[in-house]
Length: 179
Length: 179
Image (tube, each protein chain N blue to C red):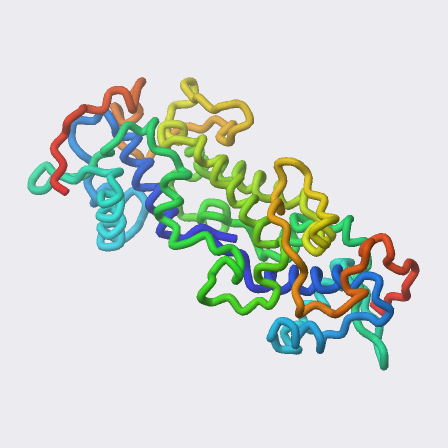
């Protein structure tokens, strides 16, 4: 069972931008590409989709780049995956068009898997971008939620104020979106 | 996000056998192949693996076939998926050998996804083969568990006693396993 590479990279871009909240200059695709060793053209497509989803603001021209369009504490991993994964058709019978299973509609497997999928996404609905990039001492993880292992941010992320004291709350408001 | 076709068919084979508990003659690969429109050679590999895992007993020769090696109420979907899925490496950083993410070990995404995966499997640890094939009136699904939508067994499953009143409890004990 895997998520798509598209979702993986989408989350990495959003986490990078979340860690950069508070920085004056917007994040450039070039720096994300360099940090993750991913091609710029591939990242460009991902960034455009993230902007279309209303999660990133893009600014053009010299000094342009991307920023989170919403506070990191308001965007959850569950919300991201619901829109970056092409589907959650765990087994054939989830796909009405492709389904050839003769048990369809008469067995409980599909319902059981739907229940498990709901719990998977419910868990990730409780994890925000801010939770993922928050410095160790400030980690806020609800009891029973994931993310209980404290970690430090990557050295690949930009230097201070890339990891500000209040990342999401210090995000400048009213930035002009070009899309 | 998908499970493998191998897991899908493994579950179908086990469910078929669970629905046949109480039948005198063992299930043949031919009849499962016909019921699901899957090649016999593909099913043969699956059946051999299920037997190796201790979930099926196989008997050779004329009148031979396969049966559940354990009561259907004792085998859960979670247990099956843990052994039929090749892995649960949801994103690149789950795989130490292939991981190139520079954030590895320093971000909380992996931990968050591990938590969600644990909830996914936990849900399926509460669903037995018996739950999946039990007749509607006898369905036993724990509160909060999946499988709340009652269904009837497939007409593709064998005729009575394929859906016995007590499928698992009427399983003959001590059947000779040839593997």
